[in-house]
Length: 209
Image (cartoon, rainbow, N blue to C red):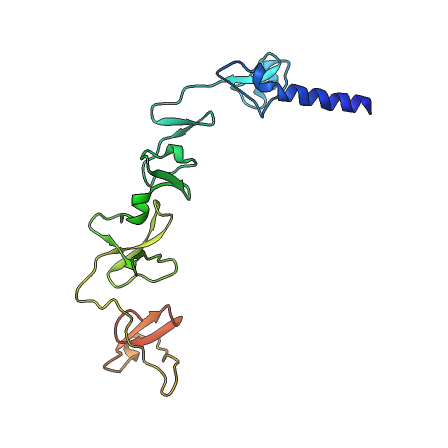
């Protein structure tokens, strides 16, 4: 029992002193790994050498397009670029969100992939087309900066973006279901379109029901 206690005390003592044994400008391996030769350290990582009884490696300066985070070099990224830490994001107001650099400006005003398109909003909020369908003239695309799907396109003054009138079964509040474009024979609800509100195709006065 005394031998086991002594062994654990020795391991704890050696581990706790790892950082002070690695010279300045060096990193320890796994918070302190005792060693007696370089080959032992190289089994874990070829960059490590046995220095003063511990596996250590010299910290290498990061490249011009990299930044050091916790002694690890990561590539600098612009808005929309991949990241694991906010320090990688170039803009001062940018941060790492869902694995991509995003800025407060970009989050409030996301940019479509096509510069001539604009983002569709609903009640002032950017519409997420993973949960809500895009209106006529808009397509669904993924925004790296926002980390969600957005609707991009252009508004057309000739389109009605409000919910249209739905044809109901007589005397009920249940929508009449249609299956083909030519099934809606009513003048005021001639369009057979899919309604996310009702979860089926309905006869609608517009293309948004």
